[in-house]
Image 1 (cartoon, rainbow, N blue to C red):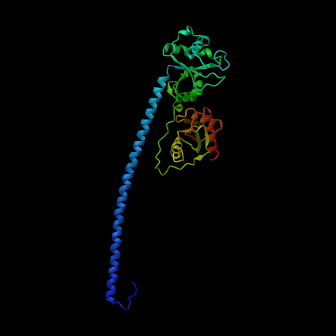
Image 2 (cartoon, rainbow, N blue to C red):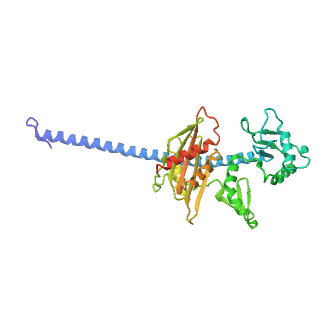
Image 3 (tube, one colour):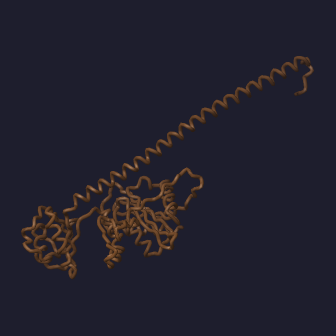
Length: 359
């Protein structure tokens, strides 16, 4: 208590001081009560927000499930729509098929090919309602021709005669979606190796490889484990970012991170979404290679619709002996976007290779 002034009676001074202390206490109690109420309200708000976040996560999982289901159905429909089509690739040095004219009848060209190269009897009687060139015409080249064979027996007859092309530089293949074609290419070396032993009963179709009746799941699109981003025990991975490469209205950005298992890969992919530009990218492609527990190498890729890029990334990692890494490349289409063909493979490889050097 402060010293009492001489002009104030002692009893009055005590009364004033006591009243002041009481007022302070009441104000403090009021503030404490207000803080308790505010804390309760904040707890209710946090609980409400947690419930909303949980609901959004559930909806996101549901949306992802539906999206995968729709993608599977679209792929199935695309495959069915192509099942009667065969793509013909010609030897550029062939006199009859190595060049193309400005005005031509592709149906007649294919029938001539069936008779003269594949030695199919009565080739002119084969029913081909539609045939046309693929891609953009370039002087001095002969583009592929895609032809439709609605009669199943005739389709299979053409495919059976494909062995006549072994000593030539002509090729024929059934048309399949680009995603399946990429998976076929991925599994093809294993298929050829296993096929040397008839007991393996190796079978490759629509991007799916069976050996002795067993599905070889390692060649399918990777299914990664789910991770809880809120788990405090999950480490933050260092994700290196390479320089941007721009070509034909597309911007490629490479990223690289060290990984040792599939869980690491899932975490890196989720954490990479926080990087600038990844969530808005037109395509987000990745490939990985890491040592497995048995001493082998676990590897796979996902081209995210930019078919061919993921497999090329994986091949680049193999050629450069890159191990225990994941490479992620994003491709963003700009307003002036146009096709750049196989150049995208080199851009993706270079972008990720640059990022890998920064680790």
